[in-house]
Image (tube, helix red, strand yellow):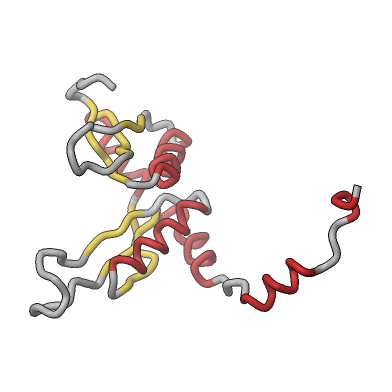
Length: 150
């Protein structure tokens, strides 16, 4: 990747799926972007870069809106990952990580945000009842489909 200073980092992800979800959302809105790694020690593996001149359009297109709030970073990160796997870009914000838990204020809350245009879909996904272990077992032990018997 070149070092053209007209490109800025919009998002940093340790997960390629999350970076690609954001990049796909932006390109579908006609905002140019690319995924790369700045090769910095300790930097996330996947950064989403956008042209500096497009930042105004990006804030309008994304319009980040809080979908859910969690007391801990792990829960917020898992939910953000779930949304990305459903093709909804997301990000985790908030919290204070400057002190370990137990020293003064707790580190949370952490907010999971998604683009305003996908807010209802994100809420629907988060409110779906997870499939129970019993249901998964029943499905796994059920009769195979006719096509799979061949």
